[in-house]
Image 1 (cartoon, rainbow, N blue to C red):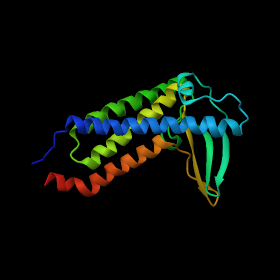
Image 2 (spheres, rainbow, N blue to C red; image 1 turned 90 degrees about the vertical axis):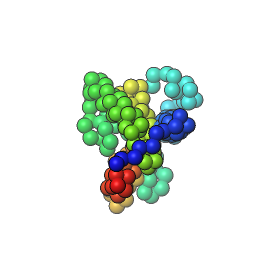
Image 3 (tube, rainbow, N blue to C red; image 1 turned 180 degrees about the horizontal axis):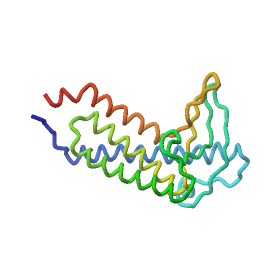
Image 4 (tube, rainbow, N blue to C red; image 1 turned 135 degrees about the horizontal axis):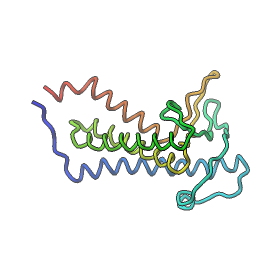
Length: 188
């Protein structure tokens, strides 16, 4: 017999609040990096506050890199694919198809949230939802996703990523941990 706990309104608000917080942190971090680090490094003089940046159509900045630590750079990379540049789409239609895919994933994960059996699952789902929406907003605004975190060692670079990507990866990892190690205890 499978036991499901009915979510309270407070719990629903909490999980969607986590998704909204991730979305906000993702967008603020992208603004902060582009406006306070990348534009000055590229000698671009017109910088915007968050609400100006968010409310105006912005062009894509050229690639850039700022050395921070021997193993870490802040970069300006446009990801026109999904995670780690897979399924790269350089056309407007391709970008809109990826936006559509993000919407489908978000709707599916939102439905799953209400049927999830554990808090770990619901937290993972909420993280994926927030990250997917953050990257979808970039695709709509810029026809690509802003990636800016670049870790490297011994000539090897991990693909550049952002806050939304991090939350998606952590959320999926939580779902895998649940499925592999915990799911049987909820079905007993």
